[in-house]
Length: 228
Image (tube, rainbow, N blue to C red):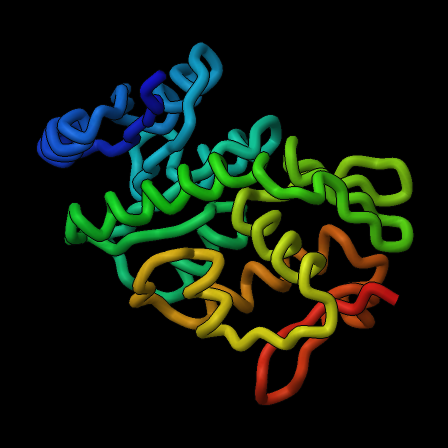
């Protein structure tokens, strides 16, 4: 079954170009031209990925993203014509999985889309289906995280980071290596993307993010996971 992608942008030319190119790769494409229509489409359909512009009429992309994250972990790639770092980081802070700045290379966007779907496909093929660390259970087949008996809602990349860390306790990963391993393509963006994801992940899994019990910083080197 082909993957279904929702493209949300107020520029018809962008939707037309993306739709044509992605359909050539076998994807099923749906489109919305403003934030309210995006929410309507999302509520009435099942999507495997959403490509979401930041600047939208009626409801902006960050507002749409917030509404989506209240009920779904579907991967979201943000598009922005701005280029200020704060817009990019804010999008990730709200739960976006990735971003691209307009104008962008369609081949790079396709690579990022394939990376998202490759992670989803590989998630259920691990020999160890559940990783247990103290009060945390990480289910690799359904990509759920349970802490103290309660499910924690993680984005796709937050889960990928946690899975990598928990599968390799004590190993220190630089931000560059995390981008290469988790994002799975030649990433040209800001290394702070990793820091934003780590901070968000800590906020969700740590009792006190400023005094972490799971994900630690090796100053000047990177991050590592402690299982004891």
